[in-house]
Length: 416
Image (cartoon, rainbow, N blue to C red; front, side, top):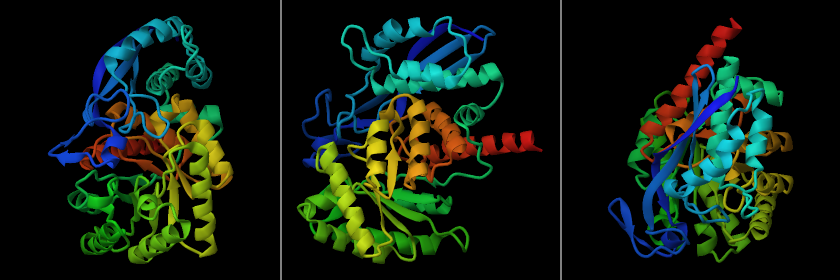
C-alpha cells in the first residue's frame, strides 16, 4: 500500500498558547486571557489561540489516514521549540516532508517514522519543529494500521514487542484555573488521577508560605470523600506547581522537603504526586535538583512522589532523568518528543528503569492526537495517560476514555 497524496490544512487546538514566563512574572488574569506583555520570543500576546496542522495521507486504495501537528501550551519555555503557527509551518511540510512521503510503501511504522523524525532541513541543518514530527508520524501510524487492517495499538505492539493492554490505563484529568468546579467533575466521573491544579503563580495559587496550596489539598481530600461515586474510590492527587515551591523557599532543599511532607500528610489517605516543585531554568541543574529532592524524600521514607516535567523534553532528556532517578515519575510530554516513535520508546525506557511513566502531553492538542496517544498507551502500558485536549475536563476525558473503551472492546472481540 502506497501513499499517493498528502494534504495539509489548518486546525484549532483544544486550548491556547500561553507565555509561561510572562505568567510567572505576574501577568494579570483578565477573563479568559491575561493582561501584560509577552516575554517569550514568538508570542504576540501572553495568551493566544492554539493552532494545529492536520496532515492527511491519501492511500492508493482510497483510504485516508491522518494525524495532527500540535505543540504544547507553554511553547518556547523550558527549552522547548517555539510557538507553532499553521501559516508558518504548512509551507515547511509541503516543501520538505511531502516529497519524502509521496509514493512510499507502507511496510512498517517504525522505520518511516524514524526517518521523518530524524530529518534535517537542508537549508539550515536543523530538525523539523517537534509539532511537525509529532503530527506526521501520527498519520504514518494510522496509514500503516489501515494498510494492514489492524488497530494502531496493534501496529505498535507488533513492532516494539509488546502486547495490547486488556485493562484500562489510569486517566489523569487537568482542571485549569477552575480548580474547584472542575475537581468536582473529575470526582463525579471517577477520574483515576486529579486535578493538575495549574499552580503557576505564588501570590494567587500557592501562597507566600505555601498556605493556599495546603488549603486546596485539604479541600480535595474532603471533597473526594464527600462526592466519591463508589465506596472504594481513592484517586491519586497529582498537582503541577511549575517550580513555584522552589521560588517561595529560594530552592532550599530542606525547606522544600518539609513542605512536601506537610502536603503528603494533608493529602492522606490519598496518594500525592507533585509535578515540577522546582525549576532551575536549565537541564543539568534541573536533573540534579530533582535527584537531590528524591534522595532526601527517600531518606525520610516519604510517600509523596515527584514528577519531572520542565527541562525533560526529548527522548534523550527522559533517558537522562530516568538514568539518574531525577523523579519518581517522568511526564512524557508527547508533542515535545517529536515523532511518536520517541513516545513509545520513552514509555518503555522508563518502565525498564523502574521509573513511573506518565504519558502526558498538553491541553493544547487536538482530539486526533489524543486518540493516537491512547493507542500508544494501550500498547505500552504507562502508569497514567493525560485526558486531553482542553481544560474543561469533560471533553478531554471523553475523548481519551471512549477511545480506550473502543480498543478494549475490539481487542476482546479478536481474542474471543
